[in-house]
Image (cartoon, rainbow, N blue to C red; front, side, top):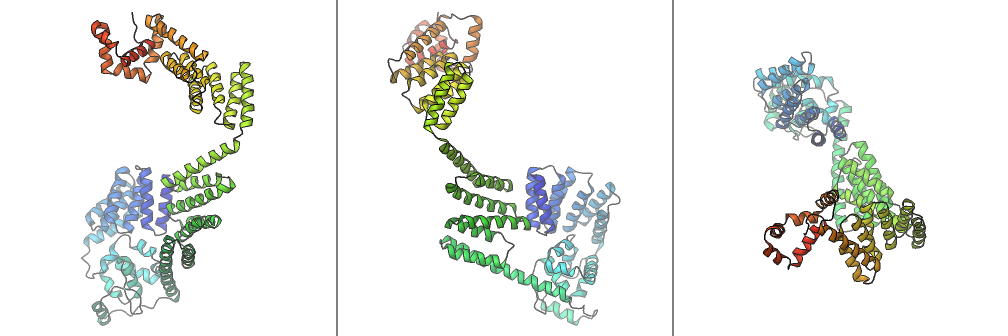
Length: 568
């Protein structure tokens, strides 16, 4: 997952979306906090946004994690240089060159840092914009400036200004340079032909009156066309956003047809924002047009992957598709496509809402399967087959048929009772106890459930618990001989425990088992009961008083049954 987040960060960085790159690298760092490359990459992204303080912090972490990695010092030098820490930048580059003396990036960085350290302060208020180490990256990220970078004379001018910012004043009349300063300062500059710029009237007058070289030639037609296309693109994106806002307003009013019209118009203006598709899909979902919703979600996922959109947006589209598939499953009775879609969404982004929808879909699928499998008649047939095998002492085979009977009719308390008997015969006491308790839960008046449960507890040597179970059963069937016999057997064992008629091995075994019982542990840890037990040993008169308390005697009886206490 860390590698996947890193790959997304690298892709965003290459596309010039440095903010997204930072988010992806941060996600990767959360998953792999000791990976030095991730801090290095995030440092570069911060530097590209001129967040030099953050870039420095990440670069320092990179060097800390991997002190023998030359690139870490390159990041460190670039961050110091961006902050104007020229001497620190020189030191960082030199430290990197000690590790890799032939590293060209470190050599170039050192030269820039040394030049910056000795360079006089620039006289132009705009010249400092060209001294940043990320100048070329920022220019490349802008479509218009990227077109200018194809022109050798422009590149030469920018290189000259970067080496000596004072030369910036020689190119104030060059529209390309003015556009570049606008990009680097993140401001709009109005040029004489209507382009955006940030040059004051005084600067304009100065540039006209100042003697200098011949004016630079106008941009090539191709570059001008690129500028116009970029401007039109920005305009269309702005209009698309307004259509989206209108769509959102209509959606809130439940004016779904109007909302769809606005989202569709937004898509026509800008097909690089998948939120228009996911929003329109939400409207279709509300209208019950599930197939249209699914189509829009699928387009959003496909387009999002093509544009390398934020994975959260892709996850949202998949979740919305899954929701539509759940709605359709109520008719088709097929929840599997929805479950698969929710699982895919969770691989993109583990959203709690998506996880909840997945759990609900899986639950609905299970309930549907149980409903379709429900057949009381077949359940009775399977139970009878189990009964025949039980008589033949083929308990494992009988369990299979009882289990099938339960699947066919989960409310069949007799199947649980019979399976409990099989488990008891096989010595699988926890499973037998569970089935017996389920039998009683389904039909509290069914005496067999109590005899099954009591038998399991008896075999587990929990005689006091078994006696309570038998007594509970007698409330519903007072004359049931099996329950009465069960009580008799329990009394015999409890009396045996009271007399201490156990071999040392039996006593040790019972005590070890009893000490694992939470109820026994609670009694022994009770300060009052500890005092009671002490009185029985040391203070006969006080012990006589304790025997009058039914609750105390009940607890003592439990300890006797467990073999912890013996009465002599």
